[in-house]
Structures are given as structure tokens and as C-alpha cells.
Amino acid sequence: MIVLKLGGSAITDKDRAETLDGEALESASDAIATALEASAEPGNPNLVIVHGGGSFGHANASDHGVTTTEGSHDIDAVHDIHGAMKTLNGFVLSRLIERDVPAVPVHPFSTASRDQSGRLELPTGQVETMVSEGFVPVLHGDLVSHAERGVTVVSGDELVAELARALEADRVGLCSTVPGVLDDDDVVIERITTLEGVADVLGESESTDVTGGMAAKVAALLDLDAEATIFGLDELEAFLAGERPGTTVY
Amino acid sequence: MIVLKLGGSAITDKDRAETLDGEALESASDAIATALEASAEPGNPNLVIVHGGGSFGHANASDHGVTTTEGSHDIDAVHDIHGAMKTLNGFVLSRLIERDVPAVPVHPFSTASRDQSGRLELPTGQVETMVSEGFVPVLHGDLVSHAERGVTVVSGDELVAELARALEADRVGLCSTVPGVLDDDDVVIERITTLEGVADVLGESESTDVTGGMAAKVAALLDLDAEATIFGLDELEAFLAGERPGTTVY
Image 1 (cartoon, each protein chain N blue to C red):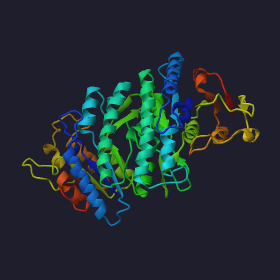
Image 2: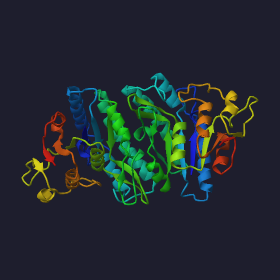
Image 3: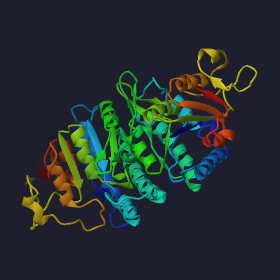
Image 4: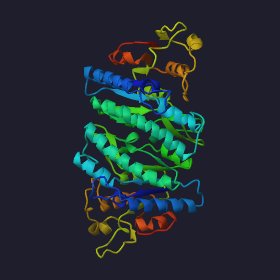
């Protein structure tokens, strides 16, 4: 089982509101379709995809002041943010289906919730059944209902971590705008085993991102039982073929 | 807690593919908005809505040969049927939101699944959290992933029954095209306590309905702990105000 994250910044233009990076998304979809055709069991891809929000989710969430901890009860906020993420999800699905990837949507707002402490409850029986039936579930960063706070953001990275645990994923892939985690000389760090070792090189991402930058990603990946790999779009096909491009966090 | 079903035939033209009964939906939305404004706790409606498929879901499911037991692995079937139901859900939500009902979508395909025996697994933590935060979740008849069968249909009625049980609903309302269950002289039967007593008057519905007609509805309602009431659109406001119009099944 592979859980693959398509970074929001990798498939959208993060600096322009609700703008797709069409070329990048086509390229990612090509790589996924090629990998599934080439896999040992083409009818049973055992793949779950999660995509981030990029310029669809983050700008809307920011406008309404909603984060992973700051909630809202405003119905317009719910529909703007959730609606934008569903629009992006529709774009991702259509590109995959055009290439015969049996992709199906799973909207986290429809299934997940948070308790008062913020702990995410994410049912995964539907995802497991979809995968076992040969479908490729496609989730996305979204809003979730949150006890005493209305709705808050759930990031794609948090969903990836929860799915990897619940589905006992073998591999987690984070397809990003960069070829991996870079050191001070912009060279890809091949392996990360502790956050302390790389804390000085992990800054904040430059665009609006309500769900944290690379440091948050690495911290979440270190917590996983699965081996996680961060790589650029060019290496997606290699990752899906079993290689370890970019940075491996374990 | 009230679980309200808006029958697919009550809000769509069941004999014309993907055609809304706009006037009926406006009228239902008016009644719901009025009832929420008049309720003792206007900010906490404690209401969950489920709508059927009518001419959006049933025709598409029928075209693809998908029922509650006959499954499909065809990705086009998934997107046609699920897509049509999401379109209808969007229409229902927009009418409610226009009237300041804090309605939010819950797509069953994103959360529910069936095991090999066909048993429905429907997580409800998200619905409970939405309701406790003052939102009105709006679910709908849909597809669900089904072990060994791909996807099958889940009817609005099955969702109503599951929700009523899981949420320990006090009342269940089925808003239909008829003023209640009718006897052979077309007079509304006020109370039904066993299926046998009314078996002879419960025929199949006249239009395409992959999820069973009135007999299936009544049988499911008799199984509930909650009191269930079947009534016509004209009586929706009365039902939400606490009255028992039409037929009560208990």
C-alpha cells in the first residue's frame, strides 16, 4: 500500500487565487497512470492519493481566518473553503480518469471530525474497501467539524499521516515543488532520521500556507512507521516504481 | 434530534432525467427555514436532513445496472451516479443556505461502505459534531463501496434508518409526494404498527426506483426505536413544529 501526497504547491500556482498549474497536474497524472499500467497487479493499484490545497484552499482559509486550530461557525466560510477544495479535487480526478486511473473522490469534511482536544477522527473503512475493489481514493486537505470550534482545517499532511497509520502503508510519498529537503547549499539531503539534525535548514514556505511548511511535514513523517520519501514532480514515476528519489525520512 | 427525509420524488420530477421540481424544493426549504427560526433554540436546530435521488440518482443507477445489491466496478458508473447525486445535493444546499439554514453537505460515498454481506457501515461522528456545532448536515442517497461488488446503491431510507439509530433520534420524518400511507379508498392511514396490517395496500411506486417503494419504507420505519411520520410537502412545517400529520409508524 502506497499513500501518495500531491503537494498543493506542486499542482497549483500558490501565488494566484484558485489557479491550477495545469501542466504540473497533467505531468503528475501521466506519471501515476504509467506507474499503474506498469505495476505487477494493474487491476489492484493499492494506492491512495491525497492532495493539498495550494491556491484553492489556503487563500480561502486565510480570508476567513480559519486554521487547523482557529475555527469558524460561519456558513459562508464553510462553503467557500470546502467548495474550493472540491473544485480542485474535481480537476485532479478528471485528469486521472482521462488516463484510465480508476480514481474516486473522498471528501474529508464528509467523514472526519475533531474532538475538543483537536484530535482527528478519520474513518478509513470506506478507503480500505475502495482500494480492495481496485479504485484509487483521492482525498484532499479540507475543513472538518470540530467540537466547540465549528470547523477547522485538516491539512493534506495530517490526512497522509492518519491514512498511513490506519492502512499500515508500506510507503508514503510526498510529491513537492522541490526535489527533496535541501541543505544550506541547496543539495538534497538523502536521509533524515531526526528533526534536530535538519532544524536549521527547514524554514517556513514562502507563500500563504495555513498548515505549516517543510518542518511540519518532516516532523509528521518522522512519527510514521512507514518509510516516507519527499521528491519533486520529475521523480514521481520513479517513486511509484519503487525507487527512493529525493529525501527519505525514517 | 429530528432526522428528516426529503423524498427524491418530492423534490425532483421523477419521470424526467435530472430535472428538479424547483417549486417543491423552494417550498420545502421555506418550511425548514421557518421551523428553525421558530424553534426554541434557533442556533441549535438538532436536525439532520437526508434527500433521495429522484430523477437524478435512479435513472443513472438504472442505466448502469447498479442497485443496492447489484454492484459495478465501472468508473464511469461511479462518476455518473455519484456526480448526479452531488449535483442534486448542491441544489438542495443552495436553497437552504439562501434561507439562512446552516446546511452543510455530507456525501455518503465519502464515508460509508458495505462489507461482503451488504451490511452498511456508516460513521456518524462527523454528523454528531456538525449538529452539536449548530450546522444542519444534508446527506443523500448515493453509492457506497461494497466489498467484492465494487459499488452499490445506498438509499436515502437506509441512511435515515442508520442515522436514527446511531443518533438516537427522537423523531423521523419522511416528506413524500403523498399525504401519508393511503388505504384502498385513498384515505390516509393515521397509524401503522405492523407491516401485515397494510401489506395489501402497499404497492410498488410507479416510476423507476431502484431502492424500493412505500412497502420498503414502512418496513424500515417499523424497525426503528424512533417514532416515524410519513406526510406530504404541505405538512412539513407542521411536522417540524411537533405535530403528527399523515401516517405515524411506530
